[in-house]
Image (cartoon, rainbow, N blue to C red; front, side):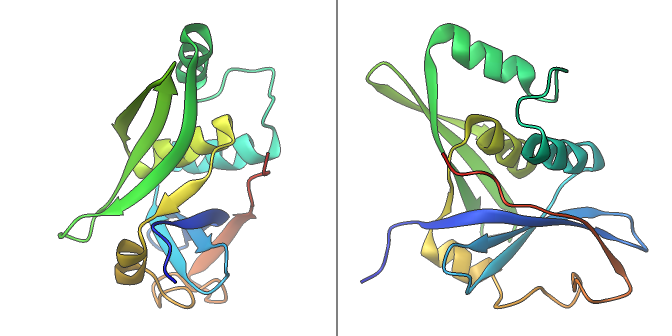
Length: 159
């Protein structure tokens, strides 16, 4: 039996020592497949802070979006990561207002941060996951390589 979507958890933020490019490492909940998603430096830091200090007294990235959702009664439901034919990973935040459901196209990094802030799951269709995943980290992102620095090993809290 196959699932319509596979749930993913953010497992780590890594930084390539030579290029200084941060990357989020996500793993499906079975632990069998991993996906790497490049994120910009500010988002990498915000992802780490968002997990470690979800109720920070200081406004973080996306605080305005969270306040907007709260003020208007929007309920975030899930983040869906997608993979285009070109190989680029995209993201759609699914939310509702009353009985109406909506989708908002966001960058994958923004979507991951919002999924942490709203405590909603991250999903990916099995076909997309198979196309962009590996059973371990790709050669370019090897946690045990001297080229990569593990910034933080994280896993968002489940509600």
